[in-house]
Image (cartoon, rainbow, N blue to C red; front, side, top):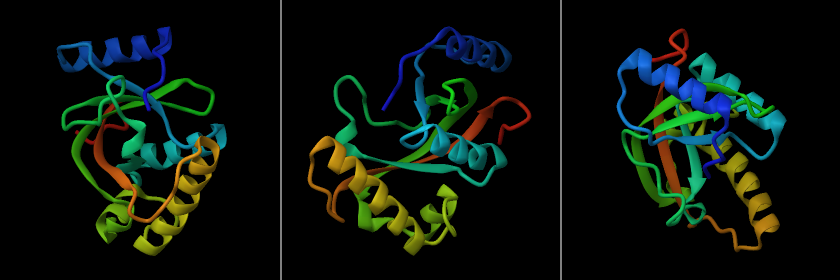
Length: 159
């Protein structure tokens, strides 16, 4: 789910656009996880090159927050809300949570990077979200599987 833009996220976006010659203003602002510690942990995996995918529930999207599309840019915040990197989405699949495969689990970079570990971690995370938000969690829940490449800052970029 996209977060509000700030002067700091706007400054990072402008620096990226000017350096890379990117046209347009469309970008999202996100923070990994459900709190500062998880945000920092997952951001560190991203910056290290271990994490190149993320998953979210389809129910989180709608008219105000469209499902990610190939070519989208995302400014990623750390646990304090400071922008740290930008990714470009390279693939989006929507499928049941239980349809995750070994390749996606490895690319998401969490736990021991196996499908079994991925399912355990994400079932727990989404069950907690379901309890907070009052929806039914099940293994067939529609999930957005998003793959990305880092494009900013230059020292962390994949391109």
